[in-house]
Length: 219
Image 1: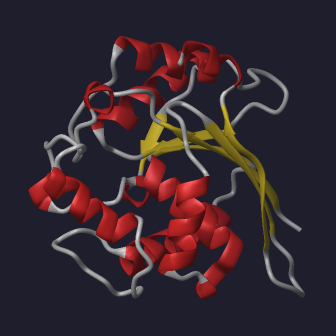
Image 2: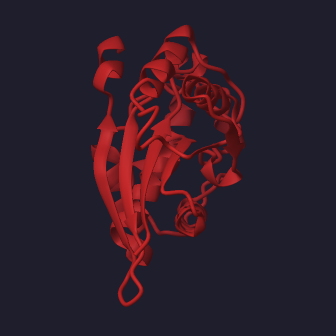
């Protein structure tokens, strides 16, 4: 039986996070965000049980976070589009999250009970995101490394753990409920366990959720 430990890390605070601006792929870390990433990096073992690979979303904020972790661990970073954040509707990117029109669109996607195939605009909708989460879990299961760091984003991480929990039965309403009650702070860690079984369904477990340790002292 193949067993893996996966460390999901959300990127550190960004300039746009601090301003409550809806982000696309651009936008770097604040000084606080860099410090958060470094504190998280220091938590990983450097000798026995050390991570074997770091894979990150290629967005600016996740690249910066992953590079800080990699420097601390003296490792290199690989990148995968499977880890990028959900694509926001074009009309809200770069806009303040408290605006009426932005809130209306976001509420339609994230806070309402809606059909799985709802598409408000040109965003990556629930079904799109669910299928990408499924692909990521397959990608993880096929890798030979046993201890993996994945640097990603809040919304996509929530979808990944939702799919771990419900599998193909996951609905948009279940996802929105789980998302609402389970925040993911900047630079926090979600630790998951994967075991491959030959004669029964492969096993995914969430061991730690939104763990900040020293990082929480900086918020």
